[in-house]
Image (tube, rainbow, N blue to C red; front, side, top):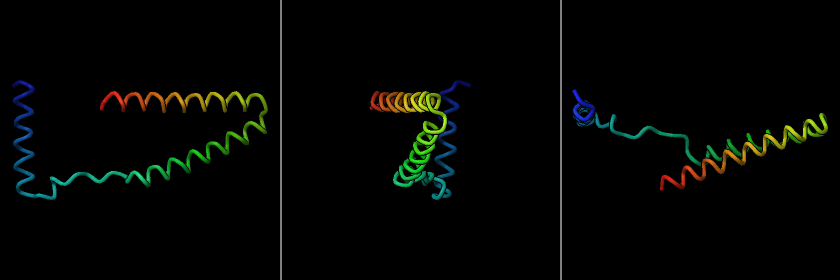
Length: 88
């Protein structure tokens, strides 16, 4: 059985189930974007405060850890932005 046949059968089964029970066809609720951004902002603020304390307590080592952390966060953000913009 080929992948196309299997996919077609799967779609038929899902269609029948959705016709029998329309609640199955509803999309799964994700975390609202506003809540996600709020949580991300709070976590970012706590991490930033922790890194600031780390720089004071550990001196040069704390500064190095902060620089690596910020560089990693910026790199992740750039990577994610490029990946999302390439999908559009």
